[in-house]
Amino acid sequence: MRAALGMTAFIIIILTGCAGPTPEGAAPAQSARLYVANQDDATVSIIDAKSQVLAETVDLRRYGFADNAKPHHVQVEPDGSAWYVTLIGAGKVVKLDRSNRLLASADLQVPGLMTLHPTQDLMFVGRSMSAVNPPPRIAVIRRSDMRVLDEIDLLFPRPHGIAVHPSGEQVFAASLGTNQLASVGVADGEVRIVDVPGPAHGFVQAAVSPDGHWLAVTAELTDELMIFDLTDLREPKLARTVPMPDGPFEPLFTGDGSWIYVTCLGANRVAVVDTRSWEVATVLQHDAFAQPHGAALSPDGQHVFVGNRHQLGGIHDHHGGKPTGAGTVVAICAANRRPDAAIQVGNYAAGMGTPLPPTVPPPRPCR
Image (cartoon, rainbow, N blue to C red; front, side, top):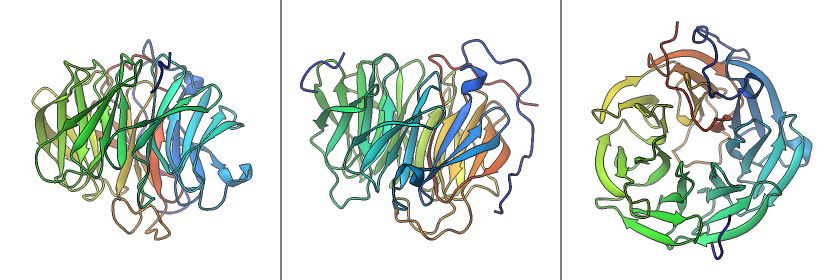
């Protein structure tokens, strides 16, 4: 920043949700929605996060977007009042309200993953890999009016993974093309580059632990989850690596930071890492896991949702059009580490989002 920026057409439900009342601090029940970007359909599926039932499907073509709009990732305001979706094919980041009315949009070349600032009216957007040479910059957008305030040059190619620190002080971006991370100061726009040793890692996505101490980054080429110490936010230090099944894609911390769920797209599995021992506690299997891509936490912290593409092609094949079945979302009991339900959505289920409160409760055992 150049200035301070203050497998059929039905739904399969296998198990009911967790017992007990909604924990204190969770998002209100009326906001408990999971938004799923169906990249091959130009649609977004909306799932009731508590009942785990498909509520509705938003067809983006009704707003004038084309068949190849390619919705890729979704983020949601903590109170559920609005949601955002990146459209790779349309070159836009779109804002809609809870009633799915189009509010505003921002023009951005091949927008990919995004993250919302925890306290300021800002969002940060990385780049998709659809372009041969995507811009080596992340965008800063003011959420209230979707104005692009800045594009920050990261000095490395293919910025893909992106996450903001819970304090809101730094944004972290990771490169698919080089073994580098960027730590960007929100207030001053200072960019610091962190070089990571080893062969080409292919960093896909990043996540920060709830306590702000750890940065987890998936390395799809070396099949690792790389853990960085954030004692100095400006200079993340590689602390350890955790071996993963083939093609680790998106990491997700539980509300108490005790577990990291990692979608492993190439292996059709989901790995669960115990952050106390930094070992893989279990590798989950399910008939509905087929190229598991996106991951999202339920607002009450009790379930991890995993979106599945069910497509032929490689990890970064964004062209689609080769479905082996409709996309699915699998709900996993976060505490028991057990798949609970599979919900059919649109073709090529990609990134997902839910309205997460500032503090997400720890998972409890499900019934």
